[in-house]
Length: 342
Image (cartoon, rainbow, N blue to C red; front, side, top):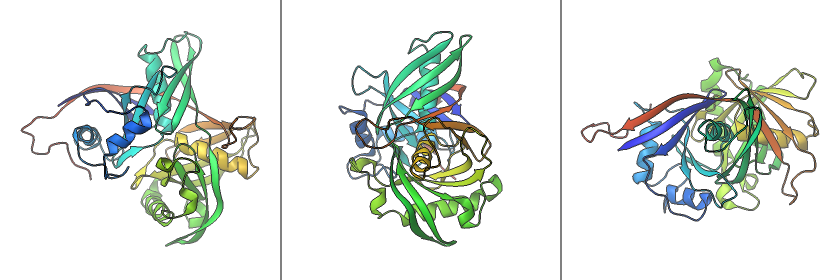
């Protein structure tokens, strides 16, 4: 098995773009291809074994990856209006959305020449993801990519102040669907703060909240059951307002206890929807969203909302940088096979 990739990070979170080495994935849309990747009888966090999932496990497992690795398989878009499609993956399976990955893909599409871009100005990259079509606006100056703003699918708040019992007491969470479903709660309500020294405690309570919400009506997507179920739990601290709008520091615990090193792109979109619903963020104001390692995304709610009335339209801005190019091999005599996770 030979698999060729180019790796980026967006605000510290890795994104491994698979250029070739994967089997063909049948389906008429990216959403259908995700269902094929999961496999009949499998789930998003427990896919059925197969040739495609062998590649995912090879790239996310040690010694070629690690439990925090994230990436995507390039697939055809749903139609000619988009430049590319992608199936997002992580150590536990396949996700429906990935904001930091969208930022990385926008940068890669321009950096690689797939999408033509001016030396100075903006190039727009349209990407089909399992939750719909998103657009990455790639900012350029002096022939270099300086940042990426992605416009997400509409974000919908399905619950506010929803009581959830945890080992640290009952807390009130907000739930929003923003390509993936996120529950968010102030870390202080759990007796915690968002800092790297408390990651074991933050991870444990994030997993508790995700499990407690598994059967809640709030986590059911209003129109597409394939997008239902809590993907991430956002634990946040309030930071001083910088004058342009609210500021928060967060850690997002997603899938089965995975930690987002970035401020979480789709999670930022979910937080924007919640803040707008709470009356804390008006169109034109920005959320400064800081990660547990101190990197920053900024986000805003666009005026007018979704034309179809399905929620609010958000944009999130960040940076992405290439970290390497790789050809990964699987020696048939290697007894570790596709690897292991610790």
